[in-house]
Length: 441
Image (cartoon, rainbow, N blue to C red; front, side, top):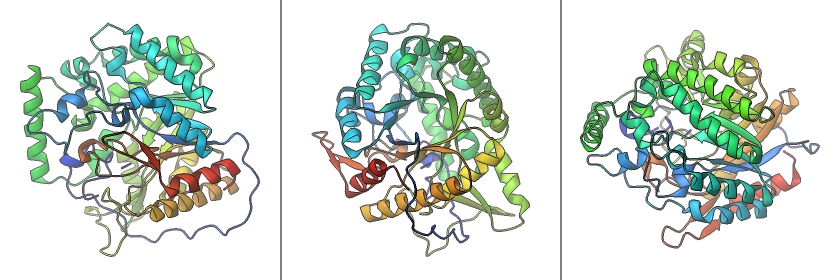
């Protein structure tokens, strides 16, 4: 994910945590170059999320949070990349690059704009989106909740209210009934343990003060003292409710579409220790908690989403060395983390593994190419070790709205003109596409 104050989901949390730390230990050496056989059934893709790319998601909690004062957001999402209307341009770009899958989101706030009211027009819209995706030869990998929720859901307390799991499962059931046949894979939550990740970061008093002020502004704007946003809610409260929500949603989707693989993604940053070896196990428990059991028992596959490593000593998170290369998200440039988290997922969860997010925000596109190559070296090493890895999905296809960081953090394989919405592929896009077309690492 995407510190300065960055890694705790790049921006959802950037305004509320203190300086994010990066690791200090040496990385793994790249695998020796040699020609490998083609990969059977491997998914090569790029990702976006609904709120970050579609634009004008006005019925969501995030839209309200962006438009109040004070706010944690540096700018508003606004039109974003206008992917709500230009989705086929995105699919065409992915197809031209040689990708064979595409990860995208369905926005709950559009499907159920008010409690209990489901929009047939929006369900039809997403049916057209998924149909267009398939027509471009791209397998749709769909996320049903990527950090945002409907405004009405946030106003009633979000995932801090006892009946939240039933409401989320009801939404997932409706989507599966109408759209499940068009999906290749589906996940319930994006990085369901995001609240646990946020809790690991040192907090600055200034950031905490701004967060409290923004929360007060949201309460005033909605008239609801229960207004709840996932990244800033108490994970001790939200985590068990979200776990139950996933279990109920898994059952509901399977009831509607038994053949559709249903998975879960977690933020899987590479935990390392600069102190006692036992710190790794301790901080892994803090980051993942009971989500490990949920993934084992109620998922057909597991999505690895890794951006860097986090190092801890006996005092907490360790800042990066002064000479460490930093990304524009503020965390350490460390693509070797991906292989380590794949290995962790293999030995800990034991489900089929898909890399559903891996990427980097840099000004120099040559460093993006270097990141992709090093991350894929790690995937190749895992494959050589006998670990079944089924995808590499780069975050993101486009420079999109990076939450509280706004549009200043370019993860995209393609730049997007903020006025004309023209997509301009970078050299890294063609580099990654050539690898995908060759279907070899």
